[in-house]
Image (cartoon, rainbow, N blue to C red; front, side, top):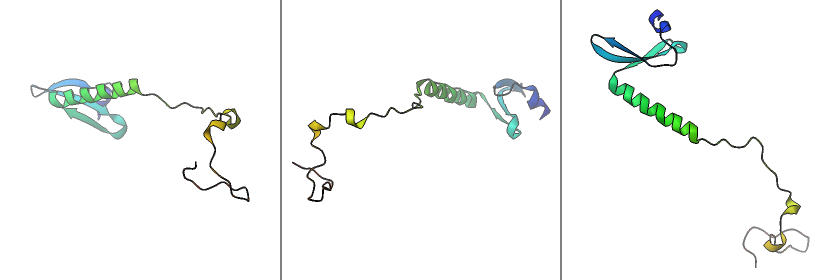
Length: 97
C-alpha cells in the first residue's frame, strides 16, 4: 500500500518488474491497484479515447424547458378533437372527418 501511495493517483504508471513491462493504475480509495501488461494497456488506452470522444460529443439537455402558450398556436387549421356530444363532451380518440 505504501508503494501505491507513492504513485500519481488516477494515472497509469509504467514499471518494469522481472524484466517485463507492466502498467499500474492505483485506486487508493478502494485499497487496490489495476495492473496489466502491454496488451491490457492498449485496451485501456482505446477505452479512454472512446470515453473522451463520447464526452466531447455529449449534448446535455437544457436546464429549462420553453413552454409555448397554447393560445398562440394555430389550432384553427387542425379541426380539433372531433364532434362533441349534446352535453358538450369531446368525442373519444380516433380519426374524425
